Image 1 (cartoon, one colour):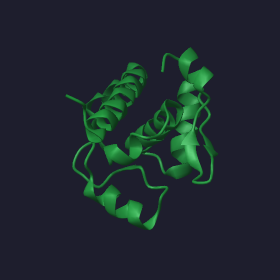
Image 2 (cartoon, rainbow, N blue to C red; image 1 turned 30 degrees about the horizontal axis):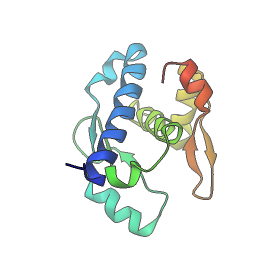
Image 3 (tube, one colour; image 1 turned 90 degrees about the vertical axis):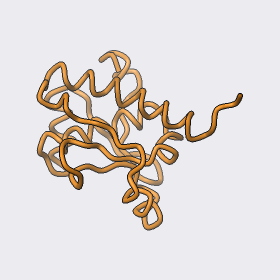
Length: 132
């Protein structure tokens, strides 16, 4: 039986999240409690106002990175990894600019903003080199 789009996109997002989480937790074990919420209704509502809304954190109890799997699941690995790294920067206690700075200072990965939506992105070659 064919898998649904939701199953395929949720699996893609979950796989990238797991890789990024393992990478981050090696240096910051305290972030190991961070979980992924693939069905955040706030993201679904935000996407109606802004096509740029794919992830956020901070509104649920505990360290939770929220997304809407079907929307985020169409993004390439480099964009998803950069978005997750940025969100881990928030979970670590940083604001927008501070999250990207944290990623660069601790992992050597510059987060860039590209495309018409100005989404977070990281060089796929560098991500591969880092084991992401």
